[in-house]
Amino acid sequence: MAEIVTVEKALWALCVLLTAGLFALLLYRKNHRVYPFLFTYVLITLMQNPVLFATYRVWGFDSPASTNIAWGVQGLVVAARALAVAEICRRVMGMYRGIWALAWRMLLVIAGLVLLYSWAVARPRWQAAILNSDRGIELAIAGVIVMVFLFAQHYEIQVAPADRYLAIGFLLFSCFTVLNNTLLEGWLERYETLWNLFGTLAFMASLLIWIWAVRETQEEGSLQPEMLSGVAYCTLAPEINFRLKTLNEQLGKLWYSEAKKH
Amino acid sequence: MSLFFYLFFGLVGLLLVLFAWSVRNLGKRGKTIADAGALEECGRGHVVHLPQIRQALAETDYSYLSQKAPAFVSRRIRQERRRVALAYLSALRADFQSLLRMAKIIARLSPEVVALHEFERLRLTVAFAWRYQMVRLQLGAGLMPIPRLDGLSDLVSGLSVRMETAMNELGERAVLAAEMASSFDGRGSDVA
Image 1 (cartoon, one colour):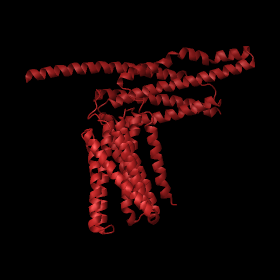
Image 2 (cartoon, helix red, strand yellow):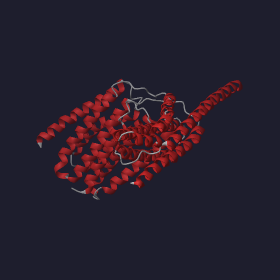
Image 3 (cartoon, one colour):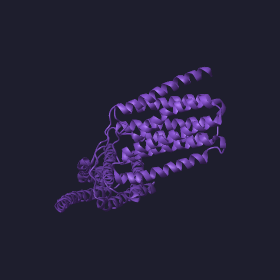
């Protein structure tokens, strides 16, 4: 147990260093203008450490004040992370106005549904309420990232490598947090030390991915594509759908008629 | 171990699989509206060979050969015809996909899209993919006789032509809109 605590402390220090490195890199490469919400998230994460350090020093580890401050700051970090993810979603799809208008509404609905699901299937214990909330939000973030990339895949939208790596970092961290919190809920007593250790490791891995993503200066705003008139879509979309439907029916007839013969 | 425990693990696993699937071709992408013409050409390519394919699949040819040629030749011809039917089915799918791609480009470049149309197209795409795979599997496994594909190819061909006409109309409209915009700009500056 003592070794785990020592390793965890060392990893924690390394995490602080990496976060500071990411913060400096964002500034140095002027990527803070490109990713203002990511920059804010990194800044809040960086500030989280001295705040927690001071809190524990003043009130001790087990005091209610420390717990409230720690979870309050954590809430702020999670909110900043959600905004940073929203920023990536906008960078991926924002330039396509029509699709983006559809996508962000869908993403909000999906995030809401995931949150509801997460609450519905969790154990109804008030002690686990914070864990459930944290897990629900992380699951919603992961769901949103996956949906955005499914949208990009469906509409064949090119995603900048930096955005892709940032999204991968956020997704892995969110997924890992969900699993980690689920394990903690299952084995609260035995898993507590390992929970911190694995959480730190996951965050460190994400930090490395993010550092890789912003190692070069990114373009502030990509070129806006020339948009078609609204009439074009209204004319063509139903026409194409009708043709595709007829084609499907033909293929269906072919299949069913041949299937009936056998 | 409770069910909820596995539910979260399953969900995370599903999310990771979906994400891996969605980023698999992102690096290769980068095609824009400029590729639309090339796509259209690609889509039309298969339909051009329709008369030859019809000839290859003609029932009369097969009946004649079955009567005249030995059994092994007849069997071989049957395999060849099946291969042709499969290849043609793949080509039809390519046509379908290129037209679908055109629809996606139009949606991507439209200032507004209607959710209903988009979901409908997604549903149709899934349905087509499913049916196509079923027909292909059955045909490949020899469980299905060689089908009549004339109706399908005519339909795709018709759609290609309509799309081409529509895209030409779009181009003309765009030029007209640009001219109108420039004339409005000119009038605006005069007034100012």
